[in-house]
Amino acid sequence: MMMKPNSSSSIITPFPSLCPENSKPLIFLVLSSLLLSTTVFYFYNFSSSPWQRGIRINNVGNSISNTSLKTQCNLFSGDWIPYPKGPFYTNATVCEIDDRQNCMKFGRPDTDFLKWRWKPDDCDLPLFDGTEFLQLMRGKSLAFVGDSLSRNQLQSLLCLLATVVDSVQVSHAPFSKARMWFYAEYNFTLAFYWSFHLVRSEDAEVNVNLTRMNVYLDEVDESWVTQVENFDFLIISSGQWFLRPLMYYEKGKLIGCYLCKKENITDLDVFYGYKMAFRTSFRALLNLKKFKGITFLRTFTPSHYENGYWNEGGTCNRTRPTPKHEMKLSDYFSELHSTQVAELRAAEMEGKKIRGLKFRLLEVTKMMTLRPDGHPSHYGHPASANIRTPDCAHWCLPGPVDTWNEALLQMLKMEAKSRDPR
Ligand SMILES: *[C@@H]1O[C@H](CO)[C@@H](O)[C@H](O)[C@H]1NC(C)=O
Ligand SMILES: *[C@@H]1O[C@H](CO)[C@@H](O)[C@H](O)[C@H]1NC(C)=O
Ligand SMILES: *[C@@H]1O[C@H](CO)[C@@H](O)[C@H](O)[C@H]1NC(C)=O
Ligand SMILES: *[C@@H]1O[C@H](CO)[C@@H](O)[C@H](O)[C@H]1NC(C)=O
Ligand SMILES: *[C@@H]1O[C@H](CO)[C@@H](O)[C@H](O)[C@H]1NC(C)=O
Ligand SMILES: *[C@@H]1O[C@H](CO)[C@@H](O)[C@H](O)[C@H]1NC(C)=O
Image 1 (cartoon, helix red, strand yellow):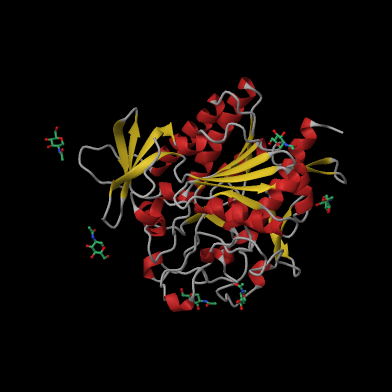
Image 2: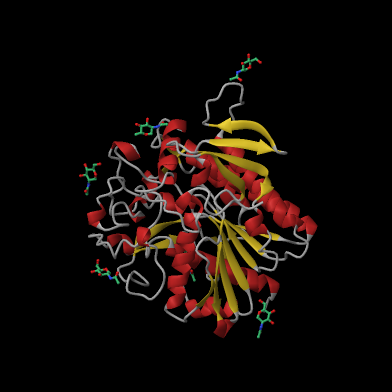
């Protein structure tokens, strides 16, 4: 069953306002991180276990070869280095940048955040080449499935490609949960499926500050899964919407809740819901009879409120990346990350057995943890709007999100090579 498109105003429209002025999600995001991890900035050393585990096993799917080293290079282990020539497009490029992430349009005064490039330790990450991307995608289709951060990456891709070729938007109904673009010259279809929990969910109680939602952890959201069977590539992600108060259902029965504090209802943590939602989604893909696509999990990115919580004057006003040696990820964010990676790994094993289905990691968590300077903060709306709460969760466009697509292109190239080794 799909959610009724207008059951709660902006929250479940295709591009909900996640900005503070008229919606709750950002507030949930911050509030619940606040409630759960008493300190978002209670850090622990990044180089310890979950990362290492993720990275070590992962030397095939998300690495490119470095011919001079005659070895594979992990694209996601590296650091940001200055790149004075950035950015690759601007707010004047004819492409769609959501106002809430259009930091240039709203006059963000510092531009240094645009002048960094990701440098993997053992190789260089090539600049995005739109022509190369489109040639790889000739006759193919790629879909993003997820929330507004997924849209962040989609819009980056649309803008990066806009410098090469025009697209035609094929469909967009105001309340539709899907949008589609077609690049006729390349017979390439690009789609976006809006599904913030990936599984079915609905508002449980409306009109209170912390709208509680029912999440049906074992029922995939049909609105996307029925559409993707013929896609060649999927990029799936989800995050912030699991951090709010949730009632967890399985087999149609309430099995517990997160942040609900109700008598006689088992308290379950955020990781449980997050784990089950990915498990259900990946299983649904494994069970799609005709699906032959490659699924990429784009990993979680943390928000960066500092000097207080979002409602206590917390900000994200940095203008430079965090040096790598100072980087720490809270236990909380780290566990969210390892939870989703574990599910991806399990799906990857299953996929090998079933139809050789491939599951890959677009491992952006680490690189984005280093970019507290990349968020819209107050530059996602006109100053006249006088919005006090900064957005330290989404990412400016152009901005560090563009790197996700650079890495994606290299991974797609590797996949093409492994299919057709020449
Ligand atoms: C782009 O950004 C500049 C600098 O902030 C601003 O003056 C200009 O109006 C913006 N243009 C568009 C089309 O948003
Ligand atoms: C290969 O790795 C070395 C060592 O990091 C680096 O200097 C070189 O630029 C890399 N080559 C390519 C093609 O990325
Ligand atoms: C375009 O791509 C689709 C697959 O996405 C394929 O079925 C179709 O034959 C292609 N059309 C042309 C004209 O190449
Ligand atoms: C909602 O928030 C307002 C302002 O923060 C507060 O006064 C009110 O009591 C809250 N309502 C509920 C039902 O929690
Ligand atoms: C919780 O369970 C106890 C024991 O069954 C019962 O007495 C109590 O009324 C229940 N509380 C609620 C809010 O349902
Ligand atoms: C960033 O915000 C903090 C308050 O949260 C303030 O003390 C600091 O001066 C600000 N830095 C800049 C560069 O604006």
